[in-house]
Length: 139
Figure (tube, rainbow, N blue to C red):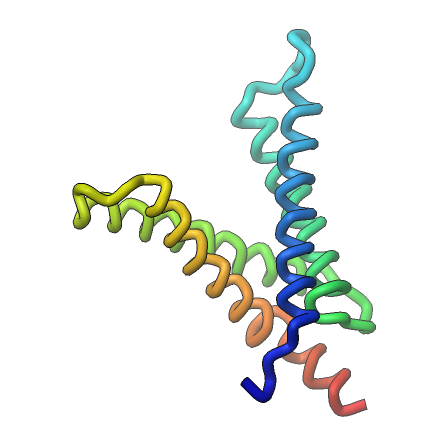
């Protein structure tokens, strides 16, 4: 495991938890009042976008420790990786339930989420932040 970095694992977990908490808090704030102008779907879309932004910034800082300036192109690439991971998570969940009838649905969520986490990390490491990591390693 010569290239294994525990601080990246910790940063990845911290960033994921920060994004999750952002998602929950923004969503709850948007639907908290009975007079809220947003329905739950609209509130969730807004909370997901906010969570993606927080996740992107946290992964830059805590997972990959990048010093370069962030940009919107990078954020778009990050969102693409995130949506791909979400799609894989959902489709794998459905496949597990379809082909393993007696499989526990909670365990299917855990397994599909673990695969999605790996896809997310690899997409960020070798896609979204690849150039910045290579440039900062050279310096």
